[in-house]
Length: 239
Image (cartoon, rainbow, N blue to C red; front, side, top):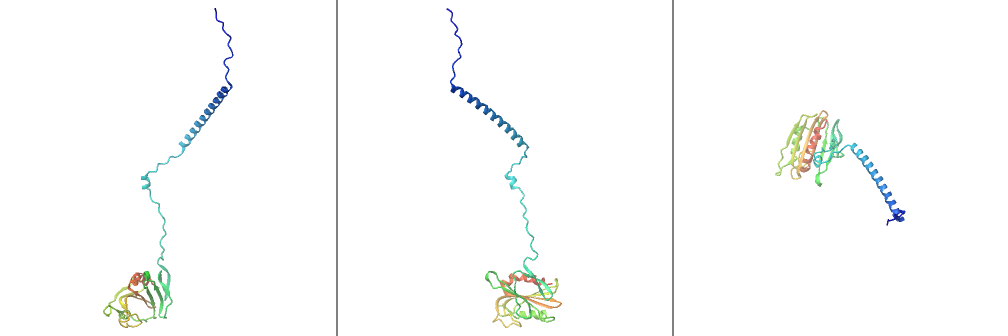
């Protein structure tokens, strides 16, 4: 008996949900393919740009350690450092030290007076410039003898001065220095009883064509020693 072939039917029917899922997956795959293409294009462009940029050498600790320091500009010191300006003595000029305080001269024989504060509350020193007129004031030797009579050692005897001369400047200068108990006065010393202990006098005689200038730095030993070099520079700077 021969089998009879049945006519082919339309096939199994696909549920509607399965059709929708198939379409959804197909659309997703297309989107993924498009995104992947874009990523590849961007990656290629970035790689090309990066290859055109200059390369920087890596900074190593050795490079930092050996780098040259940057030079810092500094201002040149002022030519008038330590002074407050120029003063006039007769027809001559001198540079006034910065810490010398100007005082009004107490007599006509004084051209100038200055007070110098002491260090850390200590008693300060003084500077006085005398001028008695052309040919007046006595000789260098007479003045040294008078100043020596005003100073005493611990036994009440006159002290020996230290005398030096300087002819290298504009004017001849004689400097006499004394240390001990000081009985300061206009004339000869009055004796050791009224003398003030531990004092120094640095006295300079500047011989100018208009007459001698008698310039004195005096006060407690510690204060005068701090001002000695400044005082000598002031005297030698008269021109």
